[in-house]
Length: 199
Image 1: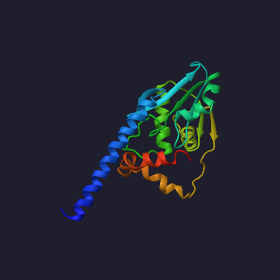
Image 2: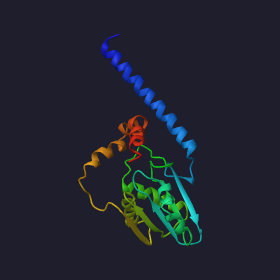
Image 3: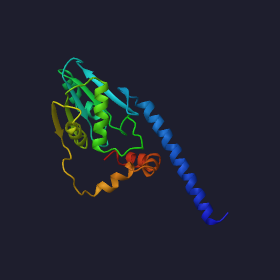
Image 4: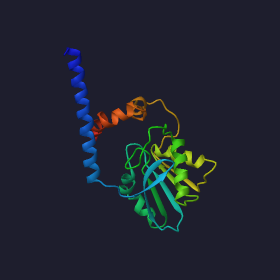
């Protein structure tokens, strides 16, 4: 066996070990932290969400930002406070928490808004107040601008409102690319996330 073949075999073995290790880590993490909400199948996407408060009251829909999930909005106390007077629906956006992110689509804010409009229709939600946090503001704005779905109010918290040329754009866009993103998901992304979590 040549040196090149040996190096390739070692690299392939290392890749397989990383993938299997990350799958095992994911399964252990999901056992320790089971879903806190319920699921809805919409447009071929399995969405995880919570629905609390008075079902007959006006509805508030919450969208989290990147790198977070439903639990961040719950931990802030916002969900409990709103649930005293409103019906509150909070989704894990596609690819976050327990919501699926099929790789056959590019998940722009507009694409996500279209998906959530259909999901909210399935849940019988009409004219909600929509809150978006961080990158979720773009989803909230896109939902409010849809001609086929009306919202009664819009709250935008610490959001992105205008295109900017930020240095982290290219670094953070890699995981969204088909194939490359899948490879990152099962190899380096969990290790990088684990390493930077304390910061």
